[in-house]
Length: 214
View 1: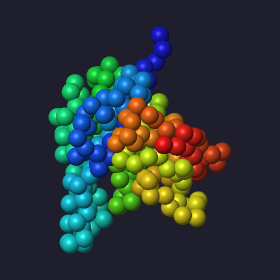
View 2 (view 1 turned 90 degrees about the horizontal axis):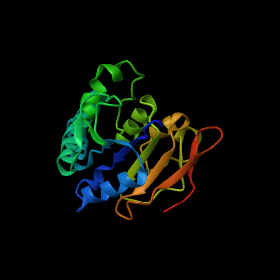
View 3 (view 1 turned 180 degrees about the horizontal axis):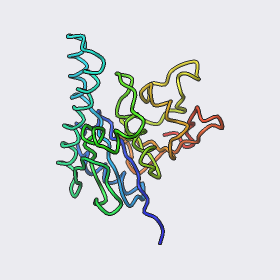
């Protein structure tokens, strides 16, 4: 019997106010051909409030980071409410413990014993749900990572420390995870949710290049 295909799907925060979001996500999930889908929610306007507070109150880096992480718990509950047959998960699921689509409660997931025993994420505004999704995909050894965004796929994604300019399509910490990432796909959810753009990794592991730009 073949092993079940497990995919992490990061849903960009800018998509949370998109009309017909649930139907579009269901089409995306079907396009992945995955047996199990683990959804990492973006923060959107909710995390934007935290950024505004930080600008006003000059919060300590670790405080603003944790508040931003906590905001993902709210958006996770939103997605769990609008997606039929999806469940909310607060710890790493086992192969037999969850249904096909699971929304990850990121504050609880990152505070769980399993994640505490893994190398920790960097702290700061340069780390968003992009990097959180990459981190989970790597440490949970899933088969693929899909970034669902409001825009088409970039031509390339690079590690800023090894490139002349930074890429704004993902957060600046994302490039550090490229060498260890599973196969990466990109979906412009405001376009055709069934179209996934694949990326190829460079030999030195520093760059991902799209092979079917949208």
